[in-house]
Length: 204
Picture 1 (tube, rainbow, N blue to C red):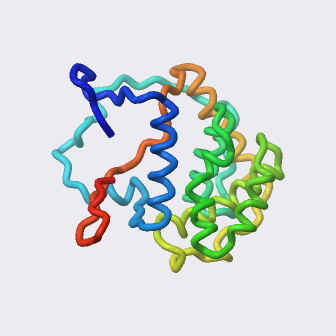
Picture 2: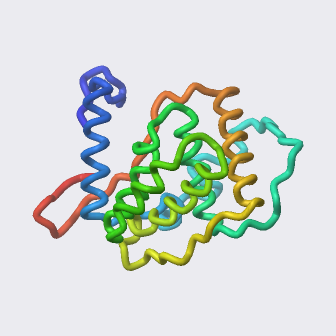
């Protein structure tokens, strides 16, 4: 990433160049790793009491939903969260291939590229078929972030009614939030890391 004088830390490259760079970085990450979920990486970083951004510095605004979620889902919570995240991106205008690029890379690493493409072809909107395919596809996320040896082909079952409904409801909540406080101006935030002891010497 390059910054120009007077840019105040903002990347001023053309959007096409930034998007191409992001795609190249995603491909490199999928091949070389390591990849960590953001929550796991953050837990390894020491923070001052109250955190870098204490809750007291923010104002609370309630965006209550009168329709409650089902309390039990048959798909692991982390997979449900990923499905909500990626489907929200699709419903906000991103292509399904771009939104699901990490689990797609995981499917390749797990030797199941054809299955990843099959599931991706079914992701369109918030129908039962689309949400179910998104959940199954997100099961490959672990192969991308943690390595194919950590991927379990039996971990993500076909989502039941409660899970499908909850995912749809949470995507709806996310879209409502974006409508109220948006628009989204940039997506695809990456945690940077440096590769030591390799021939690449890349800063990520």
